[in-house]
Length: 190
Image (cartoon, rainbow, N blue to C red):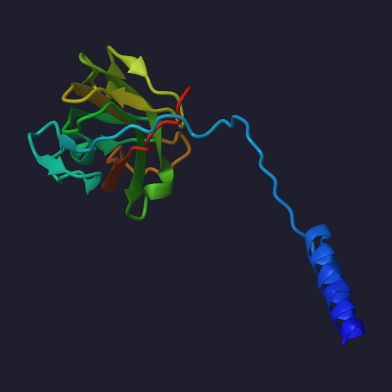
């Protein structure tokens, strides 16, 4: 009986020693601390944009087609000629918003037209189809419009010099001008 108790005590002691030292089981604990750079502070607020065409038509939103009475649509283009329209942008936002501008053309002669320039600023105007008095927006660039601010944008469209002329100086009308405004929150530090 004594041998039995001794064996049990040795077995229990061996088991306890095995559990304490690991006995083939792995147990680990680690921690890592440090500093990382994240996206920075994100702006909070809402975006909204109202666009008023040169004839007073208002659009709330980002994509629209110029009305048939807009000067750009009523211009008769000859090869190499240009036309322009002035839009008023009003920020309905609670934060500053960078705005990019895209222009597309419709109709059978669409490939004959290009955006000549986009000029922006409080006094951006057009004279005889040429945009003037303002800062020229670089291709792919953006206008930053502060919360509640208003600015003028002049979009000048040019008919390529090698475009077909319908003959006798009749010219070509521009059909289906669509203008799209887009705004993406800037990355901090940019």
